[in-house]
Image (tube, rainbow, N blue to C red; front, side, top):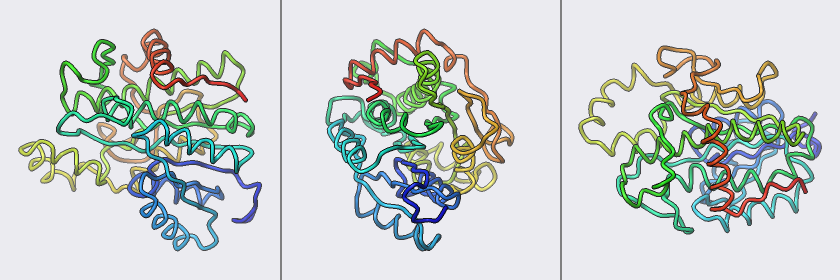
Length: 302
């Protein structure tokens, strides 16, 4: 398989212009994938593509604009991909925002962390389902977080209208991603889709997202920065669980992959601890139905 082979496996990585997403895209290219860099800012996306090609001359990669803040942008992205491609082997729902200090809303009126981190990816996956099911053994990887362990899906206040806390909203969005991964695997099994659904988390990785998050709490931020060299890993290392979940053959359907080190903060990929809340099928199915209503996702095979 050559880098320019039109039959090469195709991957879409959201938020691939920087950090974990960029490292994930780089790792996939090195494994022979064609990679679509889905980025909110086209200039940053094109710069990332240039860097990927510099790292792997002849790499088959391109940028496509995608703003998960807008369901219209998600629909436009999916329509362009369906018009240009006949199948999609891998979707990595990586993009995210963390601990916004004040409550913000997406273009569609959702609390922004819940909307960008989760709802946009939920709709995107549903719209790309026909392309995924046109590929042999397609796989979807959702990016969750250690933070999911403290999360709760507050169906009475999903968008933080009554109570907003930056970390509470972030934890909810990352728990939602893990519940989505589990529910997607069950729906695939029940419908006979043959889709492989997994999730991953990067431990504590030194990215702009993490730096923004710790800056939202001044005292905690100062303490964390002192400890950072000892408890975190690089974004390249942090992408290893995602790449493992995306490409390994020895996975179990529905697996959740994270670092093997102390507290799953760093280290080589392994099966990660999933909080009881992430295994609650009733909550996962309710969240699925609510998400379909909010995004108008239909989950059609064609």
